[in-house]
Image (cartoon, rainbow, N blue to C red; front, side, top):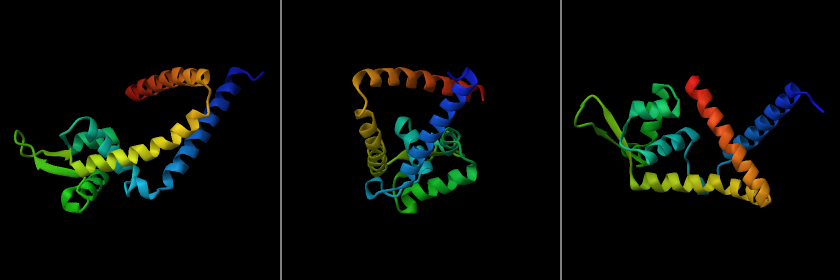
Length: 153
């Protein structure tokens, strides 16, 4: 039986292997996800949960540098041709630009999300109900540990 260090190493390698598989699957875009990049999707995700938000607020949550966020916003905004987000000057602070999702942005977000979730459904359906329950219990604990690690960061 492996010692706890070897077991931890094996677990980390398995998670990393799973991460690589998921990343590889994500990189293969199909027509149902449109032409969103991962960063663009993350920006839409943030805005789908609470909008309007400033560009800086979205940038902090997404975790990109300001210059990259500017490119993402330009690519998503109405004037950029896609029409997924709308930029407006904040009426209380005219130095601030607020972003919000448009209806086409919400549709693009939902289509991308559905497409990505589909492969997870396929994989998880193969598990029996007891394994799903165990997996869900562990996922919640792992997610909470990641959130704590990020907060301590």
